[in-house]
Length: 133
Image (cartoon, rainbow, N blue to C red; front, side, top):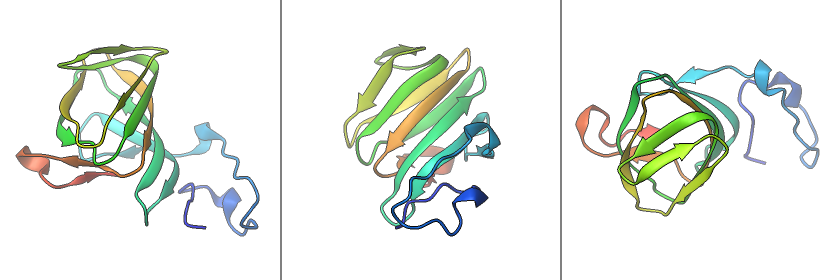
């Protein structure tokens, strides 16, 4: 099995078909390339790029132009974030098709649960070509 929850020692040595349970509060936040946006990886498969993660946006944070390489899904748990297409508020869900590009912002801060089949790719600017993973 290639999917893992990073930094979860409780999963070490489990049989391949056993469920993986995580106490989310015990998992560490890690910085992303964008200052003010941290992530907590819940499950990932580095070979395929699949990942489910919580993203914590500090108020006033902006995620530079990036492309969703495959479908990206976001459920806003707290706060809100926005782009030129709209504002995505607490309790609501937005998904974007492969190839979609945008700049995302969170003027007030947010906590968002995101599902990726492949990592986002930054387009232009200081992070050009870097993957958000």
